[in-house]
Length: 125
Length: 137
Image (cartoon, rainbow over all chains, first blue to last red; front, side, top):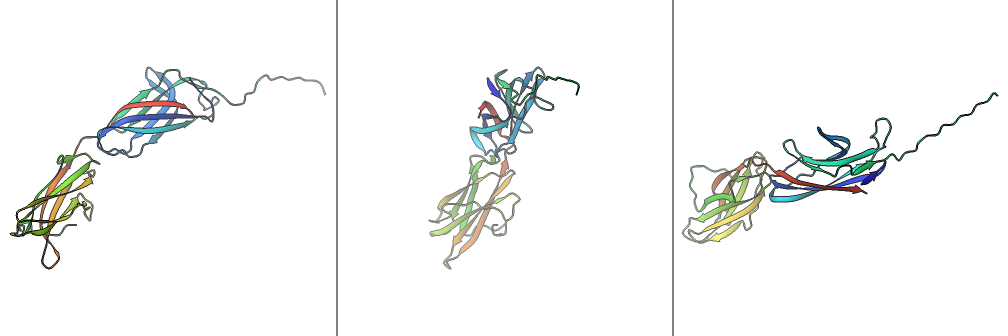
């Protein structure tokens, strides 16, 4: 399992195969979240437009890298600490190919300062 | 841009015998295409001939294709095939092959031309086999 907290970078290294006409505007997206019955509920994601892919007469491997910087975990508007999984896709307006990572393989942990154990005393002054 | 010529005029000495591409006359965008121009010596003695190729697909002036060699001396009735490569644009392209002969006046004279249409293949690029690994860096 990969544990992540604020400030860490999660690097996705991927490859796929391309064959045929040159393509532009191909996007790669990776996310962590929860894979459910109705799809993948993304908690954090990163996406880039890949460089133009030239014509390939035969299926040819194309590599890419996506870096996801982990923001604050927990608190209002931030991802909740917990156990998640990853998925990635490479897509155009007409094609999508997917990859899914191992379930429950990523943990987001809160690394921030916490406040607890409030104690108060009082007296007449 | 290639020289203008009367379409009804026959070749004088350097006939453009054929213009074609390899491997097909339909290509995918971005694919490497080889254009061939065959020139035949119609004269009764050896002459030097030169080939040129322009690509007509909307851009002006028309892009040209480098041929190596681009000229050669041919015996009478001999045919030589010139070739050069280009990347298929994202639209149909007309390959315009033309010829020159070298005169006693030490100048190249435009002679003949022929065109062939190369259609853009409707085939799209295909993506497959996505594999990803990840780790904290």
